[in-house]
Image (cartoon, rainbow, N blue to C red):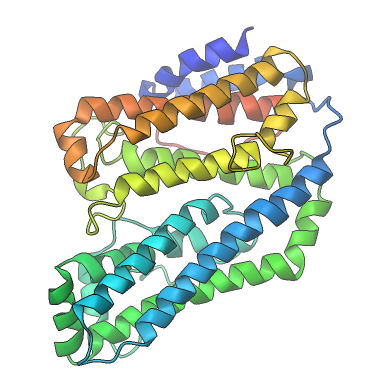
Length: 382
């Protein structure tokens, strides 16, 4: 079976077929490709790979995100009711974008410390419930991280608070509503910063050592946790949520849902965040930001270590090429993405197809080649 060719052909099929057929396709692909039916038969140094990934990819991603949300928190805390200016609001908007861009990298590592604190859900559940955010501004007490507040916290809630009107109007709101909105802005950013710091602290106080010590590929191993989180977040939170739901391709009627884009109130960030998220995926795959040009170990090196075969170097070539194609496609999108998915829906479908092709290459072929089992389920038929 030519795994690479069949996978690229399957990319379109997986977008349209019912869940039971998709499951069958994935099963055939995963059992029919790869060395020894999925067993690892390479001398690739997984220990060195895990050390590099932890020290040069994961921890720096969490560090940058924590640093950015701390700056945002401190910027909010410096504001006083009655003296907030439009310039202050513009400053906070810039800090919020920095935090959102950093999050595109940190989100990929949704396992271990991150899942223990539900960081993915508390940080970037969108669309945000604007009514809940507004109502929370009048509450004396608010607790983040509860099921009742997940839809009205994190980066999306801050997007609404800082962008639902112009900068002057936002400053006036903070100054003239009795302090409730400014207080809640500070609560939101404080919770965001606390959670980011908490996850980073676990990584740097022991979990990193546990991560690099687990060098197997079985379920629950560091490779298994890392690659399952990587695939799951790419598939559901990037491909689907950032584009597939807004442009309607994920729905039976294929009706655009423009209100579902990321950062809809900032309006001009959605494409930037999508492009940055793919850059983050490329960083994880290549192990560097130079598309494998350095000596730093990445998943590309793992595949190449399997040799000049379809499921090794051949698969790497296909993934590398598809990453280029997907990035080019994303750069063709235009902000506001909420308008683009309505006015240029067919073009957005073509971009989605490029993202979908990576799902098959990473989730089906790469996982099979590396002998790592998929341990999560996606039941929406994509």
